[in-house]
Length: 88
Image 1: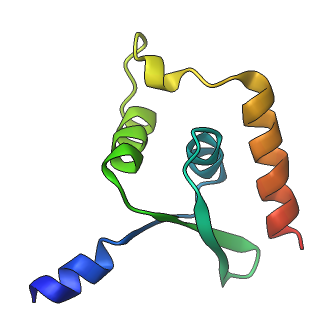
Image 2 (image 1 turned 45 degrees about the vertical axis):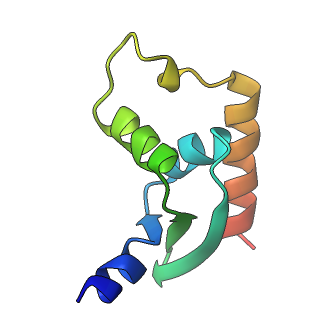
């Protein structure tokens, strides 16, 4: 049973483009983009403590949290890159 949980926890997946952009802009590598239904893509990241911290920051933000700060050019580049990838 533990082995299955370990395998399941190896990756974190999201269909939220904004979250995926935030994570990618914070140097979290994407290991896969898959279509889950017509017109909907799923972004796969390797799970890590840093990834979990960023997801928690994104979902439950505190206004003074420095992890929320992302360079606007880096964010825009990341968003364009992901949009290009999902429209291939």
